[in-house]
Picture: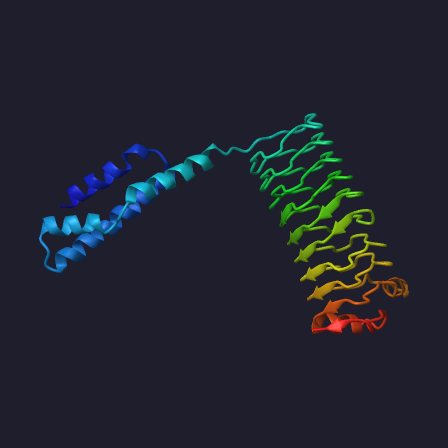
Length: 289
């Protein structure tokens, strides 16, 4: 009877021979069915009845196998594409799917990536001035030392995206949820963040002087050793936010931090206590939750 069971499973899976994930599914299914058959036999069923009940127990397996095969084939068709270093200025990549692509040292000025899925793609040391990333999925993308002057990130998906040491003058982040994004050692004085939610973002050692984060939300964010002269958090929400000041033999870093404005901000007790412990910022107009 095991031979009949094996033949049945082989027949179901035969159109998908060579598809790796389907082969694995076939092996697991056959093992489960053989165990089910043995259990039914132990309950007193004869071979034919046990076989029929075993096959009936798996339902519409053919549809499941087809769906797994389609997904597997789609993934197998996705290849790593190396597009650098070449001139791709003003190229149209809107809506493309490119996972783990490489644009290293690539000329991408004015390129259009609107709505593209660029998960895991690297733009290292590229010129992407004025590039359009509106609505693009930039999860796990890498932009270190990349020129993103005047680039647009309206409603982009930014998860674990790395912008460390990139040029972001005039870059616009609008209606964006930045999750575990790295913005360390970066000059952000002319970068625009509007209606953003910052979760787990790292601004360590970045230049944020004169920035306005009014009304925006920060959760688990690090501003450690950043330049924060005249930064405004008016009406912002801050939860579990870290502000470790740079070490200084003078009072320079403390005097600079005095200029940070938290008027109308809402913050949790831990963030409030840490700021209060610095003794230099005015927290009189802060709401503690």
